Image (cartoon, rainbow, N blue to C red; front, side, top):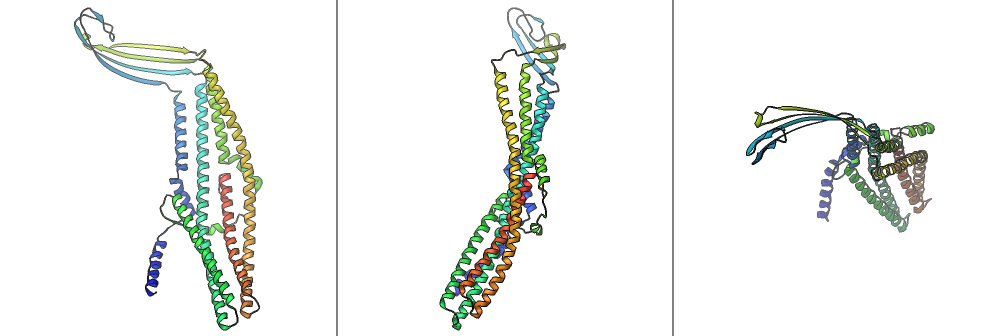
Length: 432
């Protein structure tokens, strides 16, 4: 037995430094680390960069194209005379000639049937959509991180509550055993106390398991391995005094990232539809080219040629390809418009739900705090009555269990309020 006790003692002493070395993070740090590591945030940031590049490309369509080229060739012929395809000179038979060619060309679209303007509008709307998507992704990621952080913090506090329950059960068992030895209680009292102690220890084991799970989830979310402990903060106990629901509704309708994202998506679809209709218009392109040609036959003296062209093209019939594209983009635009309107209704409905949850959680905080005070006093009275023999062990254990549950309810109520507030902040796009 002595050897077993020493092994247990060394095990506990070895485990203490490991717990002390666990990394602890604040909520702000957890959110910052999650933004850097989570794939959703990385994707939203890259989509914004892509949208910026698409807008730059749409601006570039108004600029001319510029191309430069150069080539060298060697011609060998036998028999009859022929014409050099590069310089246009007549070459005699049985000769070899080397030629050089350098050219510079430019072209600019003068008119594209309003396609470039529509594509530029679509690119601007796409960038707005990507911005709104990044903001929405940031708040959604912050919400997920906040919920996981509060899961870890509430689990740690529930472990403290369960440890206090175990201590109370141990004290009650000691009292029951002492009364049994004194002859003022029955063996049933000590057995009931022992059962209660076993149940509280099982609750503690479950709470410790939940804590390990929550801290491991928090570690994964911020890009760490193992377990990460959540740091408590006094601001978590602050309760918003009054919420202007009318102002929040107006703010959510005007600034909710979800609504902005849906509206920008509809604008992109509208601009793409306008761009597809430009296929019915002709296009006008201005081109210029200058080239320098030389060959060994004329001692590589360069001949310069210049060309200026104005090209008009008009697709009169393309087997209904234009009509198919327009029909597809009209359907996309109709769906995007319906989605934007539905997103407004969804935000309005969710805002009503979140405000109700916030008010309910605030009321639960007040009620559970009163319940803890009442349960504490009731347990004190029942313990004193049991000591004097005016109460049974059942009354004491019932009051003890009521206090345990009241303390758990206090922790759950406070974190229900914090989660409801975080969900409301993610919906409106700002902190309360």
